[in-house]
Image (cartoon, rainbow, N blue to C red):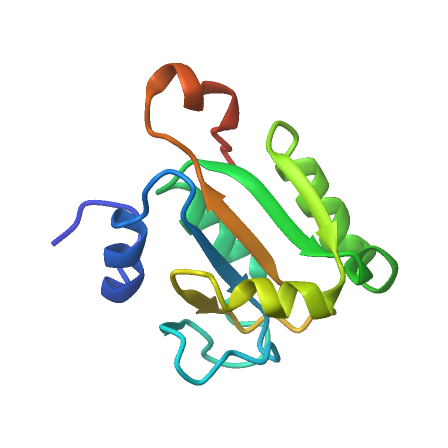
Length: 143
């Protein structure tokens, strides 16, 4: 058995398979996941697990170089928006419309569904290189 980290086998496998520049989406409970998309469903019930819990586990496993969210989050989910802006201070941070995010998600390697109910709590994450000199300022340690 693993000693620590993500113990959900499908998620652990997918995170381990990410290469530099690969993207995946961490989405809320209501995101319209394309029917043919590889889905890792972590949702147990509403808000369990929430976005922050899922993100904490994921960021313990990977290095992220770019984050893309829906611009609508800023006005309709200020708490989630502030959390993400505070978390991803060194990464490229892009805001696009929800419609554009739904379209971009079609190119993701996989989608992780949380139980999050906060409006527009969908985060497209792009993996960084694992090379030490490139990743040092991109590592995020959440409490």
